[in-house]
Every structure is written in C-alpha cells, then in structure tokens.
Length: 332
Ligand SMILES: NC(=O)c1ccc[n+]([C@@H]2O[C@H](COP(=O)([O-])OP(=O)(O)OC[C@H]3O[C@@H](n4cnc5c(N)ncnc54)[C@H](OP(=O)(O)O)[C@@H]3O)[C@@H](O)[C@H]2O)c1
Image (tube, rainbow, N blue to C red; front, side, top):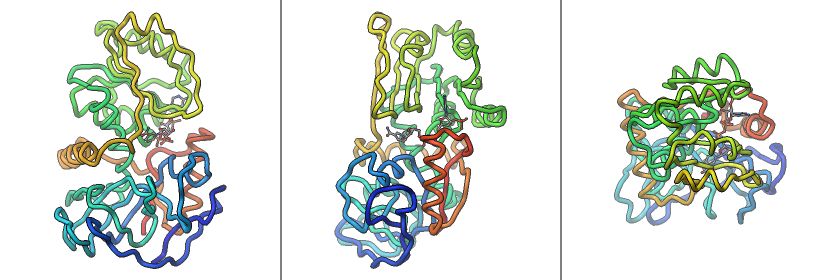
C-alpha cells in the first residue's frame, strides 16, 4: 500500500510517500480502506519531535481517518466488511498512523459514518470534534442557557466548539482575525463574533454578558492563554478550559480565581477512554444528521501531498499565518 511516513523526526520534508507492506488486522482490529484523512497540529508536533513519543520507524503519520471496512480480526463485534467508519487516536501510544491506503485500527476507536456524511467530512471532524465535545461537556459541564466564549471560533477545534455549544442551547461568543472569518463564526452559530485584535474585545464581552453575570465556559484554543484577563470576565462558578500551549507559563491571579469559585480545567483528548470518546462521536453523528454539525474543510489535497499539508498546518498553528479556515483534508 501507499503510505505517508517518516524514518526520523524533523521538518515537513522528512515525510516520505511510498510503498509499505499492507497491515493485517489483529484481534479486535478492523482493516479500513482509507478514503480520507485530516491533519491536526499534534501530527506536526510528533513529526517534528517537539512532542517526544516512542516511535517505531517507518512510522506512519496521522491521527484521523474515514473509510470502509474491508476485513475484521478475531473478536470484532461492532463492524463488518462494507461498513463505513471514521475515527481518530491513531499514531499515538505506540500505534501506527492513519495516512495510508489501509489501516488496521482497534474497533474501539471507530464509529459508524452517517450515510449523508462524506469520508472527507468525517475525517475533518474527527479529532477536533471529539476534543470540542470533551472540553464542553465532560470537562466544562456546559448547561443549556449558559454563555460560552471560544477563542478562535473558526479554527479546527473552535469551529466545532461554536457549533456544539449552540446545539446544546448555549449563547456563544467567538473570536476570529478577519471580517470574513467573523462572518463565518456567525454562520456557525455565534451570537457575537469579535475580532481578537480589537481593542474593545474585553469591553464587548463584558457588555454582552452583563445581564448574565459573565462567561460560564471559556474555551481557550490558544497556546499562550491570557488567564489573568479571562478570570476577570468569568461568572461565579465559571469553568476555564485550557488545552493548548505545553510551554506556556501564564500569570495567574489567585485571589480573583478562588473567591469567584472558578475552575481551571486542562485536558488532552487522548486521555479520554474509548467509552468517553464514543459518547462524543455518537452525539456528533446525531448532530450531523440533524444539520447541527458541519465539519469545516479549508483545503483538500491528496495523500501524496502530506508534507505540503504539514507545512500549511504548522504555518498556521505555530506561525499564525491565518491562511487556513477549516481542516486540511487529504483524499486517499
Ligand atoms: N488538548 C487537546 O486534546 C487538543 C486537541 C486538539 C488540538 N489541541 C491544540 O489546540 C490548538 C488549536 O488547534 P486547532 O486544530 O483548532 O488549530 P487551528 O485550526 O490552527 O486554529 C487556530 C485558531 O486560532 C485562532 N487564532 C490565531 N491567533 C489568535 C489570537 N491571537 N487570538 C485568538 N485566536 C487566534 C485562529 O483564528 P484566525 O484563523 O481567525 O486567525 C484559528 O481559529 C493547537 O495548539 C492544538 O495543538 C489540543
């Protein structure tokens, strides 16, 4: 099979596209003929070596995939040949990645793809959707009627946060960096969209939430969170979700934090159990079918363009070029 893989960590050009042996599904595994994959920032951190994992070379890159089951291993109960599936969590914890024509995947990391969802949409929404859902509901305990703020409302995770918060009956404030992306935030369901470069950003958040008493769930997607600012904008018992920025050392106003009964919650999607992730996936599928979830695709390339796709992702996530709106999807 053709695969995109690395033999060593480094810049995007360490990614090779060539033949590797076909995998065979082991016990509990499903063999997926991959139709589409998508790129996530973590793929670029693993490839560069910034996030140090034990990698077995050749190491196939990529977490997300969608495709069709062609064979099942011993003991598989949830899927059979011909089923369309999507999933994430590949390339982590010693597993090989998804950027290949075939992938042998533990069935616990796969979900049925709704009939009306393309493989491109399913792959685009996989890791970011599960992350948004875990942050809002498992960790953020979001309730209908609450106010959610999401920094980066059209980003991979942010666009899912905006839509899921809206689907759950929250009021949503989202930020973006251009007029076009602000309009996009509103299309995704934001009640208020504000440019994150605006000098009146905090005043606008305050006046929007004044009658409500502040923000209930702050979903931060930035790698250098301004926790000090955030805490001043929260309602009592608010929850601040932090999920990016391994090297950040933010200022922390302890007095204002504990005297308002606030919670600061960090999480990584890959720590969630298969059952926790499946609960997210099932609701995402339902919301997709009900027209409340639309995975956002910014660029569509081919699997052989994996190095170019990594460059584009890191230009946006690390260099903040702002040239991406939605996920980079590679068709296989
Ligand atoms: N903990 C976890 O489990 C987990 C899971 C997934 C991702 N992550 C991390 O979460 C982060 C976001 O991932 P992603 O896939 O959503 O990235 P992404 O698609 O690159 O989105 C980045 C977002 O940041 C926005 N942005 C850029 N500069 C900003 C600023 N100064 N203020 C506010 N927003 C700004 C961008 O808005 P514009 O496009 O409008 O400029 C865009 O919406 C990454 O660091 C990733 O590693 C963590």
